[in-house]
Image 1 (tube, rainbow, N blue to C red):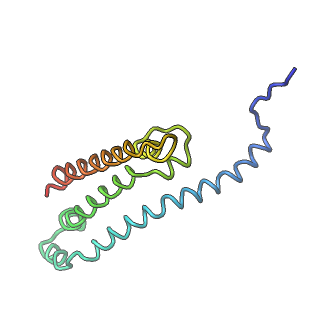
Image 2: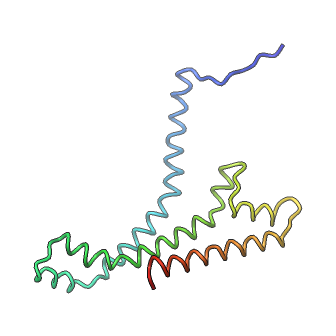
Image 3: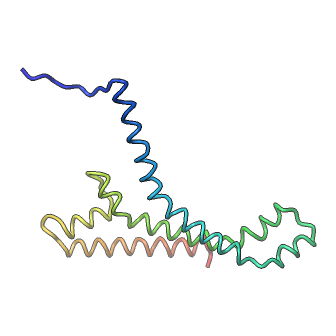
Amino acid sequence: MTEEKSFSLDRDEARFGWYLILPAVIIIGGLIIYPIIYNIYLMILSRLQSINTTYYEAAEIDGASPWQKFRHITLPELYLVVGAIVILRVIWNFNKFEEVYLLTDNVKVLSVYTYFKAFTGAMQQGQGASLALIQFLLLVAFILFYVKRVLKW
């Protein structure tokens, strides 16, 4: 008769596992999140540095509080930059393939399904190309909707 093994860890094994898992999660999370934060930071900082200081001087002469300066001068200047950041993040996340494919087994998202159709199994490259075109058209439709409705260009 074979013995069934159950999944159980005693206290020492579980504690040892956290010493290995936690630094790995922090490192991988930092490698994925750092480029995103860095790009957003650079785009917002460049726009903040290019705001004309005469707007703030005129608002100060008119007696505006710091909150009013932020609300009526800084936020409208950042509006288009934040819009561009949102569009870029949607495009990057919609086309995300590497993390989904490498970290999961059976996830059905459009980019992974396109890869499976085009490059694995029977290699149905026609279907893969049409799926890639559909993915492109979905992104274009979203970008046009976002620019027309949200950014009001």
